Image 1: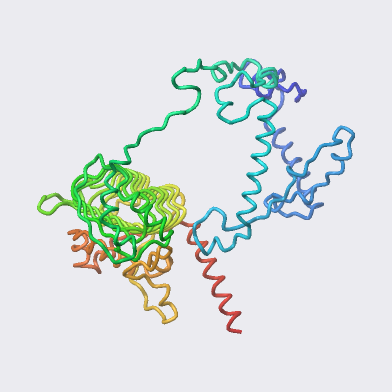
Image 2: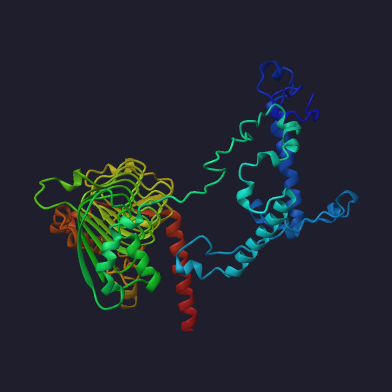
Amino acid sequence: EGCIMMRKCHLNTCPVGIATQDPELVKRFSGQPEHVINYFFFVAEELRQIMANLAFRTVNEMIGRVDRLDMRAATDHWKAKGVDLTRILYQAPAAEGVATQDPVLRAKFTGKPEHVINYFFFVAEELREIMAKLGFRTVNEMIGQVGRLDARPAVEHWKARGVDLSRLLYAAPPSHSKGLWNQDRQNHGLERALDHEVIAEAQRALDGKGPVLVERRVRNVNRTVGAMLSGEVASRYGHAGLPEDTISVKFSGTAGQSFGAFLARGVSLELTGDANDYVGKGLSGGRVVVRHPSGTGRDPTRNIIVGNTVLYGAIAGEAYFEGVAGERFAVRNSGAVAVVEGVGDHGCEYMTGGVVCVLGDTGRNFAAGMSGGVAYVYDPTGRFRELCNPAMVDLEPVAPSAPAEREDEALRPRQRSVSVENSGMGDPLRFDAERLRILVERHHLHTGSARAAELLGDWEKALTCFVKVMPKDYRRALEDLAAERAAAKAVAAE
C-alpha cells in the first residue's frame, strides 16, 4: 500500500512505513526501490511536457518567469476573493552591479537610491501600524514585552505540538537601576586617545598647507590609532583623501588592536615594533608599514609581527609587514595591496579584490571562499598546493611578462598607486611578473626587508618559485569584460 496522506511525514510515525526510520514501521512498506525510480521517471516526463507547453528547454530558464503563470484559476476562485498576489508574483529586474565596489560593475546598476529610501518608508509605516495595534509608541517600549505576543497560533498548530517556548518567551524581571533596554552611555575613553595628539600636530596638513611628519611612542593600550585622524581627513576631503604621504606618522613600540583602522588616503603609519589583531581593519586608501627594530637578530620570516584578522574588510590602500601575520590575513579584503613574509591559517579568506603577496610560508585553508583579487605565494618547497583550498581558485605559475604593446600601457602595473580607486596594479590577467617585482620592490623600500632583498638579488630564479592564486569566476568575469571592451572598440573603429 502506498501513501494514504496522513500528513505525519515529519513525526517519524508514518503508518505505512514510507516517511519513517522506525524499523517496525518500515516493515509495513511492501514497495520496492524500483517503484520509486519509476515514479520519478513519470514526474520527469510530465515536467518535460509542461516545460514544452511553456516553451522552456531547461529548469534554469523557468526561474523567475512569473509572467508565464496562469493565475486566473487561483484568483477567480471564490475562496481567493480579495487575495492580492502581486507582491509574491512580482518579477524583480535582474539588475547587475549591486553587491560590488568595482566601479565598472557598478555602472551596470540602473536602480536609484530613492527606491531603497522609499522601500524603508513603507517598512517604517507598516511597523507604526503594528505598534499602534499593540499600544506602543516607541520601539524601546516594546523590548521585553513578551506578554503582548500572541503565541497561540504557533503553539496550537499541529506542527508545533510538544514544542516548549517558555524559555524563549520568559519575561525577565526588570532591574530598577538598568531597565529593559540600554539607557547608559558607555565611556570609551576617547578623550585619552593618542589620535588627539597626532591630529593637533597634523593640523597644518589637514588645512592643506603642506605635508607633515609626526613621531610618537605607542603602547598596546592605544587602540584604533589613526582612525580619528582619518575621520578628520574624510570629513574635509571625502573618500579621495589627500595626496600620498601628506601626513606621515612614525611610531615605535607595541600597538594595540586595530592599528591603522579605516586609514584614509594621504595618511601613512610606520611602526617599528609589533602590533595586535585587526591591523589595517577597513583600510581605506592609507598606508600601513610594520617593521622589526634594527639589531634584534630575529628572522622576520619566522617571527609574528602582527596578529590575527589583519586587513579585515580593507577596501583600498597599501600594507607592508616585515614578518609573519596571524590567522585570517586579508579576510574580506576587497581592494587593498599587501605584502607579508608569512601568514597563518585561512589566509585571503572570502577575499573579493586587491592583491596579496606572501613572501614565506602559509597556514592551511588558504583562499577559502576567495572570489576575487589575486594572491602570489613564494613556495620554493612546493608545499603550498597541499595548504591551499582549491574549491574556488586555480594555482598557476608566474611566467615572465611578454613585451607589451603601446596601447597596453594603461593596463600595466605601476610603482605607485594612482588614486584611492586605482592601486596601480594594472590588469590582473596579465603582467604577473612585472606586478610581482613591483610589490617586492615596494616591500623592500618601505621595510628594508632582507627576504625582499634576497629575492630581488636573484629575481629570475625567485620568479620560478612563486605561485599565482587566481579565483576561477573572477578570471571569467575579467575575460568577459575584456571581450566587451574589445567589441566596443571594434564597433567604434568601424
